[in-house]
Each structure stands twice: as C-alpha cells, then as structure tokens.
Amino acid sequence: MRKIIIISIFILGMIIPGLNAKAVDVSNEQQLRAAIEQGGDITLTQNIEVTQPLVINKDVNISGSDYFSKSILMQGDNTLMTINSGNVTLAVDLYAGWNGGYDKYDNPTLTENQGKAIVVNNGNIKLSSSSLEAGNVGLEVNDGIVTGSLSISAGEKNNYSYSGGEALVANGGTVNLNYLQLHSGGTAITLNNNAKVYIISDMNIEEITIDSDEGNGIEVNDDASLTLKNVIIYSEQNSIYLNGGTTTLSGQIDISRFNTRPNGNSIYFNEGVNPKTKNDILVLKEDFKPSREDFDQLTPQKFSIYVNPEILELKIIDEAGMVTLNGNKLKMSFCDYTWSSSSQSENDENVIYSDLLGKSKDGLTKASKLYSCTPDREIESNELGKCTTVYINGVKQNEADASCTPVSDEENQETQNPQVVEVPSTSAYGSIIIAALGIICVIVSVFVTRKMVKQEK
Image 1 (cartoon, rainbow, N blue to C red):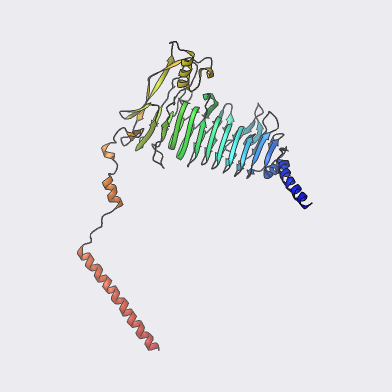
Image 2 (image 1 turned 30 degrees about the vertical axis):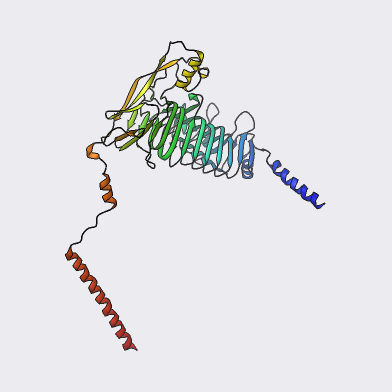
C-alpha cells in the first residue's frame, strides 16, 4: 500500500507541472503581471496598456491570440519591458513613450525621446515578427543573446519621417537578426563596448533596411563587432560611421548617397584600427558588392569615403580586391555591371547570377538581367593626413611623413628603462654628512632619555 501511495505522489508530481504549463489568457495589466511572475506561455486576448514597467526574470513566451498582432503600450518616459534572465520569446508589439493618441491609420503615436520598448540585461531572447516602437530607444541590449526578426521604429513620427530616438543600442551581448526593418530619427544602430551584432540576410537585400532621418545609419565604437550581409542603409549623415571596433561587410551592401540625402559619406573612418586589439577596423569579404539590384543597374550611386586626417594607422582587410592606395588617397574600384548579350546555357547563367548577385537566377525579379562585371568605376577618398600609415591585408602601403615618424624602438627602450643619473661627488659627500648627523642626534637623544629616567627613580 505504501508503495502505491509513493508511486501515485510521483505521478502527480509529473502531471501538475504540465497542467501549469498551459498557456494563460490575459486581457488586462493585473493578469499580465501575474502571468509573467508565474512564467510559461502567455496569450494576449486584446491590447493592454500598462502603468508600471514589466520585469521578466524567468522563462516566458508572450504572443497574441489570433493572426492579428496584439500590443502592450505604456505612456511616459519609462522602460516598458526589462529582461534580466530566462528564455524569453516575444511575438507581440510594444509601444513605449505613447502619448495616448492614434494616427489616421489607428497606430499609436509617440512622444519624441521618451520611453524605451525593451532593455535586455541578460537572458536568451527571441523576437518573432515583433514590432518595437519607442520615442527614445526601441531595443537596448546590455548583455545576453537576442535573435529573430522584427521591425523597430524610434522617435516621433511626422508623416513618413522620424525625429529623435535610436532604434537599436547594443552596449554588450550578442544580437543576431535575419529580418529587420529599422527607422529612427537619430542614429539607427549604435554599438558600444564589446557588443557583437550580426545583421544577415541570405536571400533578398530588401529584407533588411536601416534608415536614419537625422543621424548616422550605423555607428561602431570601442571594441564592438558588426557583421552585415545584404543590407540597405539610408541615412541623413553617414551610412557607416567607424569610431572603433571591427566591421565586416559581405553580399550586397547598398550604402550609396542618394540625391535626396547628399550629406555625409558611405563610410566615414573616424578611427583607423580597433582601439583595443589594434586590428583591422574594416573587413570586406570576397562577395562584397557596394551596390543594389535596382532594375537595370547595379552600380553604386555617389559612393563616398572619408578618412579622418588625424588617424595614424588605417588597417583594412580587403578580400574583394577593391581597395588600393593612390598617392595620398584611398581608392576603391567597382564593377560596372552591364548587360551581357552572349548566349549562356541555363547552368552557366545560374552560376553567373550566383557569383554576381549572391542568389540563383530563379530568385531574381523579372526586371533583372544577366550582367557581367567590368571594373571601370573608381572613387577616391579625401586626402589622408601626412601621418597616416595605411595597411591593406596586413601589408604596409606607405610611409608616414618624416616629421611625424613614431618614436623608434631604441627611444622606447630608453623610456621604459631610464638611465641612472650619476650624482656628483660633492652631493654624495653632503648626503653622507647629513646621514651621520642624523645618527648622532639619535644617540644623544637616547642618552638624555636614560639620564632623565634615572633621575626620576
């Protein structure tokens, strides 16, 4: 009988957690908070406005109840959701900095520079077709791992443009996104510290667009690492601003300067090396193409490079064979993709399409044609500083001006091991005399003290 009771208790222990794992339907803030505290699967049956920030410390899966996405909204300059730990999956829309109103399409309207949608301090977070909108910051990652596909908008929307706000700020951790639509007023993506961000599409360049109406498209700082593949970047200032870290570009990267946004540059080198590792600041992979499949042309439009003249070292890995040093300017040679009238077999055509565009012929639009690469398009940077030394693929390309030659190894050795200064003999004698007088004073004080003690006794 005792064995039967023990077995029954064991079976109940296995069943009860399974019952608790059933998705919980929530329709208001109180129910949502209780469900997050409990953990597990949570289903929103309607949009919910919260008055206090949500904090997640355990495994949670939050989604909508039907094909139409559900939203969580919060007014004021607050962080709507903070994730500190756990395996978290989100398939809902978040609105932070909501001003309580709606636009003519019934979308919530935001206040410029107010509110953060999500702050990730740690954990494993998957964003599944989520939409994050905030007046200040859409997604801030300080540590942990963030993956998935989503759209992020930051700032206050005015018709089709935004003012203020940053879409993605990575201060640490790892971010890996394969479908992304970003739009903000300020810099769309900022990488700081040792953050690692991978924004990669293996299919269509249109799947990832990064847009800043007032600032840089992407800014890389410190020891951060950025990898881009098949991405379009629109920006009011610079498409990619390199202030440190290491940035790797592959596939089609459209960072050209359009007529509507003539300011800034495609790539702006404010630093020339990773400040921590002293390694290359930019890596161009073999399949890198600074272009976009756009009807009948794939050529860069107003592609430009600027190098801070104060840089002492500029290090680039160029697997694509595009970068050279021409006098005192950095030069990039592009392929001018032109129509090829030569007859090709179906297999050959697919190979050419794969080589040029990174995908098969069948995956192209009907407007696309068969192109051949003629490297006859070149652009040059500004004049480099006289003290700038350029390294391409680890090979030194030039010598800095003699007036700014770095300190030699011998001079460095002298600095690290300073010579002993010889003291004149007169100074040495003076030191000996002072030391002797000090000893005499000590001896006299000892005798006087002993005599005084005897007199007291």
